[in-house]
Image (cartoon, rainbow, N blue to C red):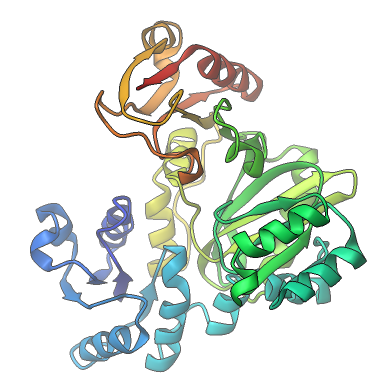
Length: 406
């Protein structure tokens, strides 16, 4: 099978998808923005061919490169795993007659107001929401729905550019800060109180082949606003518990409603006083290296499982569910440059056998703002057979390790 993979070298873990496709028996052809000489020798070894384009989201350039490839060999699949590449890849598939995620599905998995409109029609419980094209649209939605509200980009990822609005005064300020006053459309949503998590799948012809559930501690919006918090994402190994049955069923309804075929998916959800609510879904793997957490928790190669779904139409190895696993972000005490760490040796002494990966930038490294995300500065990944004990260990890491900056 000839598989085109979009942007094989950046970000760094893109190479893992290429490696896995090659291992699954695919003839992998890369299209990316970097010159071939910039690729590592190992990556070149997994690629049968590589074509540089000026931009992988510039559809004419992408289509031209694909048609050049199609003049040489038949192309059975075209894959993209980065959120920003999904729409361009879908448009190129349709233009070039390649199976895979359609432009309609890609759009509905990218545009949050359209996504929720489609899912409400399918009976999926969602927050009230609208696309605001003007400031008056936002004011009218606020008057009808009440506060608090969430305002965010229609196609944003994570908490980037997201605001919580509590009253009319904040709404007027955020109308300007969000760009809405200047004509930039935004998604406006009812704020849903409750616990936040996500469920990730590898889906094959609309059927879930693998699935994993992860909890946020605390919820993302709070985690991305408070420096003192060492936020965690914790993947359960108790996915068969009764309490997860509803969210697993909801995921399957969403996949069906959006006509997702063979793809990785990343679906966020809330559970609180109003019950379980769908938040949003991406037709792609999760970010922040979360698939590496699943590998550590389940003692298998999830990248190969994804590649097998693409190439062979099936998964290969069941996850062991032996471990719960989590990632904790460790924030510098202030902006500047990292000067050192404290508490790391103590954590290593107590729990070294549970630490599966860590990133502790060298002293002198410039810090990144907390809004840059969970992996922007230091972090650790930890696993343990017992979910509750893992949560306790992660809390202890957050209370013990300090990232000093000056």
